[in-house]
Length: 277
Image (cartoon, rainbow, N blue to C red; front, side):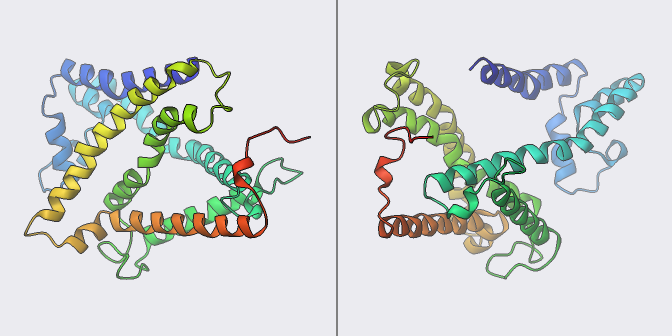
């Protein structure tokens, strides 16, 4: 809990407080306008043609700070390579957990004895990643799934990720609200057990507020606008792809439930007792 709260505090400071303070200190009140100029694809000249990154802002304000820009830019370039193994491990462990919960075939949950890791889940994660990279780089998507140029674009990928993440952000709060009623055996000795419903309610305030006004409202306004093609909007923003993946997830869930039932597996007994070693 201390590590989680510390990480959240650092994230809020680095992404919000520090950004605002440094920007105001150097007098760049047009910071957002600069970003819109860059990402909007206009022909206006920008410093070195770069987006409005904080180290660049500092270098423009004080040329002696160029080592700061060079160091942070280099770190930003190599950071994805450092982060990718973390995400691969994280996603593969989700596949392992789904397999143990009978939501995926047992193949995903097989742990390699030599590596002591779910090798199959890792390979599946890498394969899915390569598939996304392929469709983002080449014009190979079917027309009914494609964005501009029959391939995934960054804007579509961003909206796709945000739309797919809604369950990740909201389900912890929903679980905290319902777990004492649905599975009291799991939280009988949990710390702050009696406060879990209030914690869940407080948790939901942030994602519900953000998704309602930052995601759902813009989508609804665009779909109800008279001069916008609804299908084109859903395609170019990755929302249609997200809906398709939700549909695939529902199909997988139903199929695995039917398989478990046919095999005589009682999923209601999951976590009901500790299995023998």
